[in-house]
Image (cartoon, rainbow, N blue to C red; front, side):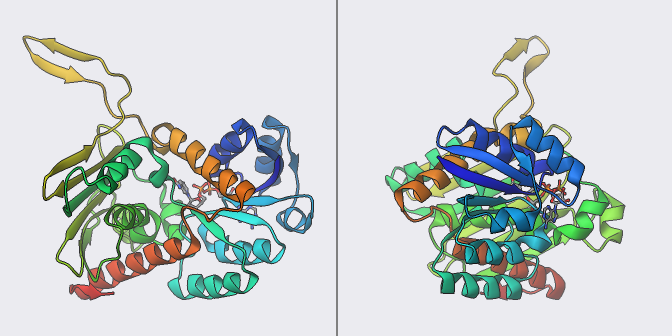
Length: 328
Ligand SMILES: NC(=O)c1ccc[n+]([C@@H]2O[C@H](COP(=O)([O-])OP(=O)(O)OC[C@H]3O[C@@H](n4cnc5c(N)ncnc54)[C@H](O)[C@@H]3O)[C@@H](O)[C@H]2O)c1
């Protein structure tokens, strides 16, 4: 039984607490948060103790920590937890700054302790099935990837201000998805973006709408579209054109009822947001972490993957700023 400490009792911390508690080989023993009340409430719900972050990291009976704190704390906590010998699963992104993330990567390499990064979408059953079909050669050679990722509604501007911006906070998932499906890193990134959903996001120096093109050394192309708003719900789709066919992973819907009448044909909306859409993926992610730790196997998503995606986010931000493609 893996004894687990959860750092951060916010939105995603609550999701992970559920996944940890549901897994038969892990036990949530402690929860920390800057806000004591948040830690106490979540700990109480899952039969754990509320403790300080430092106390959890220092406790030798804690085998693993899950870092679900605000992004600007990730590198520091990864370094502290690996130095204390813990197995670590850390939420994306690794850091707000690529330079800091690379320093963290170097420090962690010295400890020899692997770290898993929370790119949960790799564990989504639909995207995973698409990946398996690619690996099985079912559509020949992948050529053109298209990723659509629209949130139902923008986050509060207070979140936007500390998020690192759309590329580091939101599109980072799609950069990792492109790396996962294409099994390669692009050589060049071109970005366009604007703030047309919420003027306050623009006033805070961020964008809420973006399109990014990735070019690969062998000529393959990926296109990523992000918006902070989709009136009909959380839109998460992947389409891949290959030399011998097309693969499409569609949205999960609230239900599968389709109504056909003289007025037309209608169906349900996509599930509302990430908590609903990706709960099976968060559970599969946690299960993969537990499997790797308990069998001493390599993590399926690594700190290097986290740094690669962050490098792509910084390249996209530079392209947006300069109006030119950024070479990687
Ligand atoms: N993989 C995903 O789908 C996904 C979804 C949402 C958020 N995230 C990531 O998870 C992280 C948290 O996001 P959130 O939406 O839950 O934010 P949140 O603000 O709801 O929660 C973060 C919590 O961490 C606490 N905290 C900050 N520093 C701490 C420290 N040193 N020790 C203990 N607690 C600390 C804050 O008080 C806050 O309660 C972010 O990095 C975000 O990018 C990932």
